[in-house]
Image 1 (tube, rainbow, N blue to C red):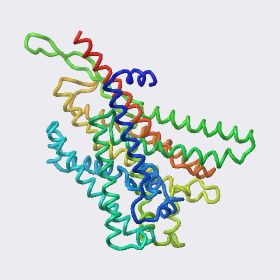
Image 2: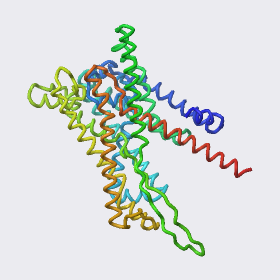
Image 3: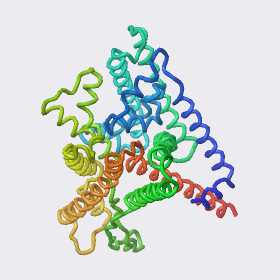
Image 4: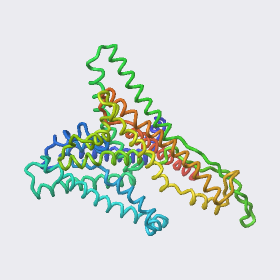
Amino acid sequence: MLKTLRSAFKVKDIRRRIFYVFLMLIIIRIGSNIPIPGVDRDFLHGILEGSQEASALANMFSGGALAQSAIFALSINPYITSSIIMQLLTIAIPKLEEMQKDGEEGRKKIAAITRYVTIGLALFESTAMAIGFGNRGWIKEIDATKIIVVVVALTAGSAFLMWVGERINEKGIGNGISIVLAINIVSRIPSDLYVLYENFIKTKTIAKGTLAALIIIAIILLVVVLVLILNGALRKIPVQYSKKMQGRKMVGGQSSHIPLKINTAGVIPIIFASSIMSFPSIIMQMLNKSEGTGIGAHILAAMNSNNWFNRNNMWYTFGLLFYVILVVFFAYFYTSITFNPMEVADNMKKQGGFIPGIRPGKPTVEFLTKILNYVIFIGAAGLAIVAIIPFFFNGMFGANVSFGGTSLIIVVGVVLDTIKQMESMMLVRNYKGFLND
């Protein structure tokens, strides 16, 4: 990776793109510290302390801007949500499916619709926040004008980040939206490491502090290794193409493969599962309702990830079972939308391809479905393990950090994708140089 970076900086065009990305990242971090006019900056910080994983994820995705009531508090969450909604609608609405298959022009139209949906979601989320939290003291001397100012500031901040992401796609390197998300996550890691230092190292003797530091480093490295394995693991299904006459030449006959990623759905299952688990508590927080003392209060407590693996009350950890079920369910659900075995089998048949030992048509569809179900389950299990490790240490030892498996999957994926894009750009440049010679 370091060799790739050194080589990239030697190329003027790539160096200019890297500097452009750095400039955009500086702007993002500045905006993440500019407060929304007329709000109590400490209010949301108090609300988010001890909150559920989805609230912690929202704050982490915003780089701490949510807890600081900054103008980038919504971050690019509305854009991520709108992209997922558009993916779902593309399957459900034939017209959108036609647009997607209509080449570059169709993709531009879908991108434009995604932007409008993003603005709509940002308006909805910012209005809900302004009214829900504003009535509880977030907005000082609340009135209609101040609510409008907060809504406009939050919506404009989210729209600006969406614009930054698109500009990085155009003038920088890597996927702009992913890079914006990754830098926000990375910006939270130093403060989390300092929390670990204060809780487990600072107050201990040299021997105990050193041992604690080594254990913390080992756990972080273990999670990183698991993420790398999960992110890079593939199941390659061999495909053989039959020979056929094309004009006077015999073409085809080559071998290829269908790469099935073990973690086919990425972090989408974790985000969906966390959102569903925390939705009831977030609604109650916004309505300023107490949880009560009945069975409903115990259910809400069990759905809160901060209560899992708590040595004082391990009973609430049963909520983790529901969380794992949701992760597995959404892994299957999201993959079924993005990968269609029947479509893959039809494309293979049209191109004269077949899986050795499997007849084209229905047998190929059944084989692909069987392999896909197996791969999804392995990926979902690995994803659940990576997500559970931080829950265990937060609950058992009070680690109280926001970064974990989810954030590391995103950061590692973004870094690997960006490095691959750098390598491909340098490869294209070398080919051009060879042709010019």
